[in-house]
Image (tube, rainbow, N blue to C red):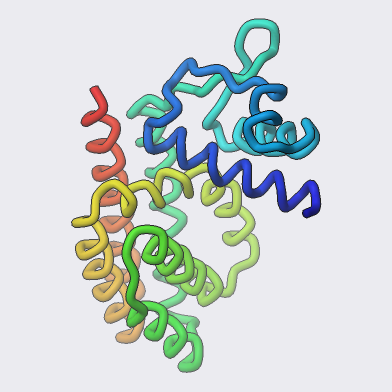
Length: 210
């Protein structure tokens, strides 16, 4: 297995543990201990930690060691507000620019079934299809960093709150209807509300941990 693939697997496990609260704020993430845990060299461990740091999930502590970062409600709110505005802009543009073939793909994604991890994947595909449909490479580039930083939290809402899957699917359906009707303003407003609902769920998850 390549070091890059190993790093991706370590990242996936650690990000899930951080977001779901298995790893708590302040918990140490030593390269040696993680290497022993995963049975891998320090190179993929280091790559995974650097990616987690770029996403804001961990930070440097005393002696430059990595620690799980406390993600405050305000920090998450700011992240989701910025993401929501850009996602809304994408949805509005997609309503004006998506081809019939792209709309058919979007509809098939929405018709897919899934729970937990499966639905999280469908959610990613739905949003990606809208971004592609917006046909604006500058906007897509701006979203790349915010998507990377928010993705663990967005996925967690479906893993920890099964009821969120149904409401998210309904919100997607409304967005699809607005895009199909070529109503850019409504598509943007619905996407903004959708991202606000996601933020609300994430904040509830964090508050419930005490």
